Length: 413
Image (tube, rainbow, N blue to C red; front, side, top):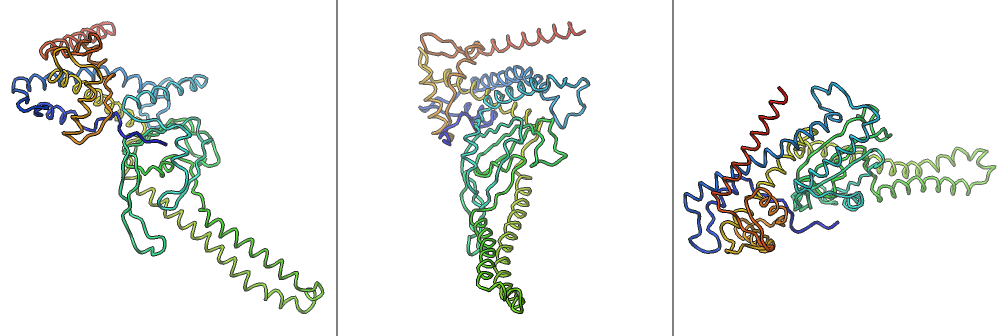
């Protein structure tokens, strides 16, 4: 699969971004914000955070309701379970909503074909796994951020030597799946719930270890050795027996013949057993390493994943709005900027000053500014409204939220 060089995710905390924008000097000297403008921008940033958070509240409530029927950790459980006939439709809605949420949080969805290409072959530790795809009613895998991680690997011959190796990794991996009864799964496996998992720093080739029902494959060389041992043993016995006359086997030479066969057969079978036992030890060692590794790489589970991802999507939206407004407000010419101009300026400035390479979603950001009344568009060029007017418009939005909340409370009462 092809990993994009730049991603939409902006890896800067909102609080750090606000301080950076307040103190950065711009392309020319003497452009640092005066103290009054710094205070105004900080206030605007707080209003933007509150505005975005309020718009996400409905999303949080909707996701909680959709997931309640499938949450294995729900406490308390819903008083009225979803009717059995309606569960497939509710399940489809949940997966569709989750896929949409992952896009807003700037995660990349991996198709089944892409997953199989990523999982093909053994990992850097010589372990290959077979995934039973038919053990799932539905499964989706997403990643965000790609890079290189450091792992320790032993020399293939001088096993006591350890060395650091670079391993391609995904910074974040999210998995959502619903299981179905399958021989690969334990009899006590929960096949009614939907499981959500979030991990960090997962080697790309080991992404298969995040799915249940996987089985470690014996390496081809080990299978060849084991098959060769068995075939060699059978072939040797047949050949040896064919060299003895039948009457000799039935007579006094039978015992000597059997002793003649015992030593080489035992040697070949012993070699085969050693190969099989070595694979079993490797499998147990890998399972132990996997358990210990995922203990530190697991970030969240089930309902906690939803809240973490919603928080990430919310922060990303705040970053996009603040960056778009700030650069239009401070550096755009009198007639404004085209979307491509703003996109290039933000990307180049973040890369030059912060060392952050991103693919800025300029179209999405400008649409949010326009809808909130923080920017105007004419002839394909965008201009930021003055910061005091922008603040007034956000304050007006807050008043609308407050009135809507009061009206809802009155109706409920």
